[in-house]
Amino acid sequence: MASKGKPKATTVKRDPNTLVAKPNKERAAVLAQVAVQPSIKGAVTIKEYVKEDGDLDLMRLVDELSDQEKAVNDGNLKHAEGMLMVQAHTLDAIFNSLVTNRKIETKEKAYEHDQASSSDFSLGIMRGCPGV
Image 1 (tube, helix red, strand yellow):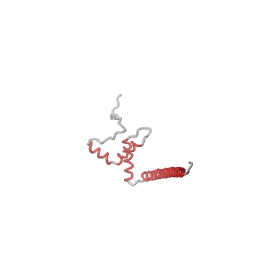
Image 2 (cartoon, rainbow, N blue to C red):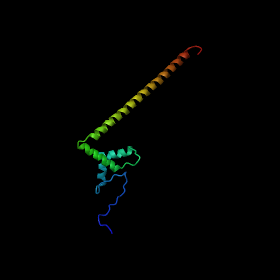
Image 3 (spheres, one colour):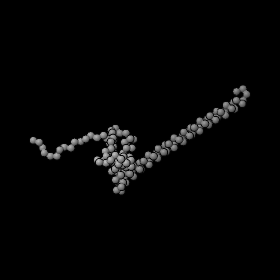
Image 4 (cartoon, rainbow, N blue to C red):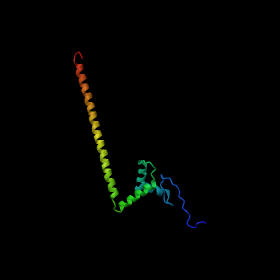
């Protein structure tokens, strides 16, 4: 007995690295949107720099960033504020590490310079002494 109902929708497997444009949208319009849409630019950047065990799905990243963008536009700043606080602490740690390492390198170079100058001075004195 055959069941009568809606035909089953076939799922088309799509490339997770490809942005899917709305139908009937011309290529130039899609490229312009990609160039200025923060959620798309952010998703492309995240996909490039965040290497996970699995492949990040570009369209799902765009959707998630769009949802977060909408939340901010609706006045919900919890995620954005949390992210900014974490980034501030992270950047502060990186900055302080770079400054500290630079300071150590500068001191080491100054020490090496002092040692070289001292050796040159000692050699100069020894050259002036008879019998050395």
